[in-house]
Length: 459
Ligand code: ADP
Image (cartoon, rainbow, N blue to C red; front, side, top):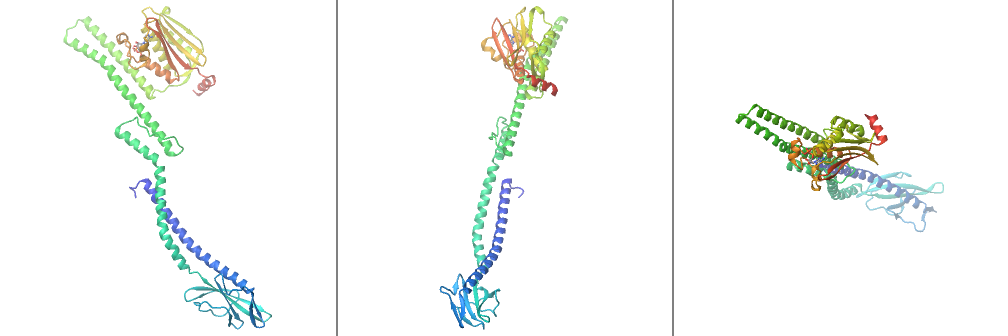
């Protein structure tokens, strides 16, 4: 039994319950049926004999009956006896053996040769002293015979009924367990084939299994997401770290093989240091992006004064004032994570200088436009061609790696910018013309007044 499936156990339980119920029902029916038959027979005897008594009279020593009087009616044989107990009219049933004496109004049972009889005597008086005895005899249906017939029917019907109950029960249980089977099959397929993209995909329902399936699907989605992020991180890190590592290795081998002058050695050390810096910043950026992806670095959402944040950032930048102009509308607030938004703005400003002309200009503005806040970083630099404009948001994509390489770029900045914008429910737009310049705009929903206050109170 322990090894049986839950479905089989429930089916066996239902069938067993049905069997017990049916057995109880049969026993109850037999017991009640017997009592009911006896009671009905007694009532029938009383009713019939009483009505017969109303139709019988003793007149001048003779028994007279009304027209239509029947000695045998409704299963009751009526016999008329004189006061001296001699039979005057009526016929005794063949198998009836007789009964001792007469008792007024008392129902007795008397054994016949083949059957049992109910016997009732009534006294029909005529004058003060005379009268006749009216005896009613009713053959009681044989309860054992009835029980036997009933059990014979039950012996055929019960197995059929139990079989139907078992089949029906099993079908219902199987249907109820179908979502669980689907969960089981999908989970096994995922574990065997290591295919995290599979989902149970049950339509939403109100039962426990449907919500369990939903929870499992969410779990699989999270697992897949984490797994993909980890895979991406490993691939990205190994791919991008290979270059600086091989440069460092090459430089070391060269320094070992060839006698270098102190100046050359100094240059090699400086180059190794630059590559190490590059690796460290790369690992740092990758980790941040992976944490954002996985949700381990969760955004601390609060009301942020975007205007103040950008002004502070520009002050820290320490760029020559003739190369940087700012037009910041005060008090533009958004709901977001201040550190992430500062990272986003810093990236855009760095890029604007990095890909600008040597003495080019950068314009930064913050403004509220309708329902949204806009942060715009514009430069008059090299610009980006139409074909490249969609690609620059991808991880590790660089239009001109030689140019980015000089400045320790790895093609991760804009990908992180877009990720942060999306995390805040916003998006990025770009307008750029090669040779003229680029304009990157962050669009974010403005913090609602009530929401902002609530967020501030919640802190
Ligand atoms: P990185 O600067 O490290 O190369 P980013 O993701 O920040 O990586 O940028 C991706 C690419 O987009 C850069 O390599 C560069 O070619 C291009 N790009 C970014 N900002 C600008 C800009 N302001 N003007 C021109 N090109 C840009």
